[in-house]
Length: 496
Ligand code: BES
Ligand code: ZN
Ligand code: ZN
Image (cartoon, rainbow, N blue to C red):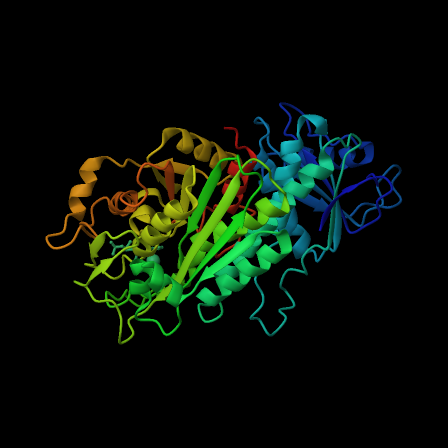
């Protein structure tokens, strides 16, 4: 969709020309085009525009005016006066995308401000913002709303006279953002249309498209291998569980990163049934699995070279069918540890424990990151802005925190002191699956920690950020696609 344009603003005669401008200390912001700057001066004098971040205005250029570009519309968007960051450009991209869609614009040209060789990161952010901000999920709408935003932009281009590195930055931004949009698609699908089998199908297709290896462990294989956690959670569902494994191998001596994503295609709570208000949101309980698969998609598409990767998505529904797991049941996880299931709604940790233990034993990774909508407690603690990060390794945390910040997906580390493990003591098994309510995000991670041993590991609790994420121009209502770009960025910036 996005490209670098050699056609400059003076020759462009398309639907929408966009200038990004800085807020100036005094006087009117400037874009560098004399005739356009005259218009900006007028609007600034009226007090309607100062170039603040998020501020913008659209006008219809007078074709007769000397020196005026011949585009049909011109949009002036402010970048503020603070130091420029990738996030400022991402938000600008989101603003441009939504305005373009409102005006039913089909093509647009954005003129980049300043020297691009000094700001390829910004170009990448802008590309991401355009793609992420143009996202809508309309699959199930049968009627066209005449007031609805126009079709997605079909041609968007960025222009700069100094083009070094621009095409690559646009391509990378687009790859990451498109992958995040695919994760949003998976999450938007109702649970009847995004089942464990859909995860497997997506994994197989990715493997074919990008030369990865895909293995799907079906119910029989899971039984044979002894993955008792995912099997137990699946007992109440009419659909069999599936565990999708993707392998992306660059070179044998590169370190291996294992990604694990919670793929609960619907979480009713099981016999410990959730209240009905808001239960429909539990179709989103697969966002961790979606993030992991879509991050693999971006990594493979960008042909990243630094790390070997293995991604595992344990996928099932959690329903209270006649054979469902019951409170008080004792199950055996992969590797032999036993768990007294006190609450069947704390199911995510049961299948993650299997996937983590199995993935570590089988693939001997150098580090592990899991992503899961694991606890309501993280929503209470961190709200809808920061993802909870819990880990046994400081260096891994530092890298993830930096990646999250760069991507506009900030994380916040919570503690994992051994004292929290007391809550999980069981009288009859090795552990209980829940503690008290207190510190729920930490006790959930404490449970997972029992299954990773000494392998450097980080757990991302995305229950607050996978949907209803912080309001921003490039985050539409519904699922956010969180963690796809953070994982992509983490792998891109990997240095031993
Ligand atoms: N999928 C939920 C966590 C969740 C809650 C995600 C709200 C998004 C929004 C998870 O399986 C769950 O139900 N966790 C319980 C654990 C409790 C029973 C210890 C919770 O957080 O309430
Ligand atoms: Zn649950
Ligand atoms: Zn759940």
